[in-house]
Every structure is written in C-alpha cells, then in structure tokens.
Length: 111
Image (cartoon, rainbow, N blue to C red; front, side, top):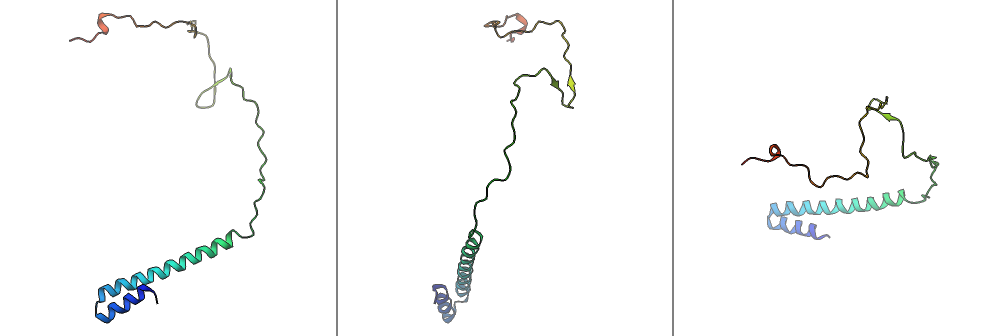
C-alpha cells in the first residue's frame, strides 16, 4: 500500500476529513504521474524504433559569383534609376578632413 493511501485511511479513521481529502488527492496525483511517465516511455520507444536517417533529398543550389559592384541602381518600386552628372565635385577618400570646424560667433552658445 502506498504512503498516500495509508495516510488517507489513517486520517479517515481518526475523523480528520480535510487531511484525508488532501491525502486522497496526493494519491491520485502520484498514480496519474506514474501512468503518464510510463506512457511517455512507451510512446518514445514506438516513435524512435526502426527509424533510419534518410539522406537529404534536395540538391544544393547553384551559386553564381556575385558581382561586388553594379552600375545599375534600383529604387524601392523596382525601377532603374538613372544618375545624371550635375557638375558637383565628389570628395575622394584621399582628401584630408579639417581637424576642427571653423568657429564664428553665431555658432557659439550665449550666456
């Protein structure tokens, strides 16, 4: 006889019905938990028995060499954008950046 059932019977014989009810619930919980554990073991045994790993059936995709640079610019609607020179000089990475921006009286906070 399990410990929970023994406690249930003892509490009933003394007339302690509240504790007997809790002992009964504990006995049922233990019985259900044991049944679930056994069912998990049985199902896991059925699922993973006689199962062999199957080879991957999808072939690897062909990957072309991506072009790191393109002369075509596409907008958010998928249309090609034409760039027309406007005469402005573009900076080059070799140009030096001034250490400090020029200071004038208008850019300083007033106190």
